[in-house]
Image 1 (cartoon, rainbow, N blue to C red):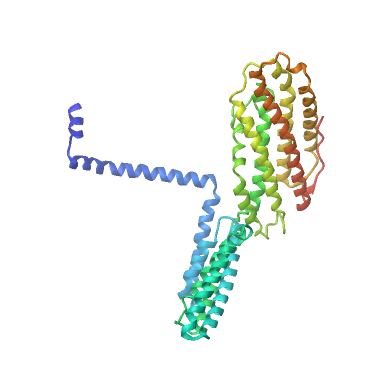
Image 2: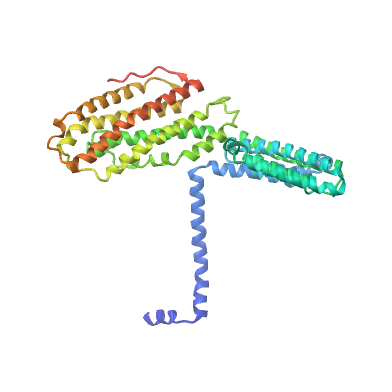
Length: 440
């Protein structure tokens, strides 16, 4: 056996190459199985991805069939411009309704305005003859492309109309510059109209399919994201007190699954996602759950407050790894009120998240906030007493005191989040329900 393996290792390039070829089918099959498993997991994680893929294929198929309708194909010459409809569907049909509507309307309006301006510049240039025509086209192309590109840097324009401004530049340049000295005006206008019709057709098909077949409302995703973020923060706070002070019966510390201690981290990086969702949600005018002119900007305020709270929570999490196993005298005196604040704060956030998900207006969260503030005041009085610090070990006391101060500082943020949710409920006209009564 040793001789065969030695001879194989010392074999020439032909032997090694033959071994590589023999092993290739097995490696390719293993690679294919691995890719198939990843694709399966991707679809199982969110089945809407599979539906969206089928929607794109259906939309392209419907648009492509137009070239086989002889009356339309003959009148509008769709067979020469069908590629614009296919390109429009591919570029416009996004995963969510808001993104599809935004891109579709941007593309149609940009194509119309850019094409009209391009025809106008071409008409002006032809009046100046062969010498002045390239000068006029060049000057207008420089001015318009530079001005529109600069407008794209404006944050408000970039957030909602960046794609439309880009298509505007592209359409204007295609019509004004490429038509120089080649075609008469009426032929050029006819060509522009044909392309505009095919782009409108592609955008319309993409929008209709996106809305009518298993629509994905980005506004609903933003709404659920805000509620989920607060729920994650609530889970952490509700379990932190018992986890840090080793109180099994307090909060969630008696659970074997400690994933609630890490769930808040996604809140820290949610800013870009929330801003993108809020900008796209403004295009969703037909969402029956939220109605017209829903206050999407309010979700950005709620998200900012949630992240500020999450930063405090992140600091608390750093103390879990350095917690003292044997409670000191100082810790034993303040652990009960501190754990109670964590518990009440966590319950308040979870109650706010539940109300947001149901889109209801209640006062059931108020008792938790009132209890938290009352315990904070009592704890402040306790910390100001001199006997509490007598004979305290500085090395053991400082980390615990820092945790207490951070926990006390979180309560005002939770009150601000509650006020922001109440403002959202007022602006969006959430329905009122009878609040549950909690013992104090």
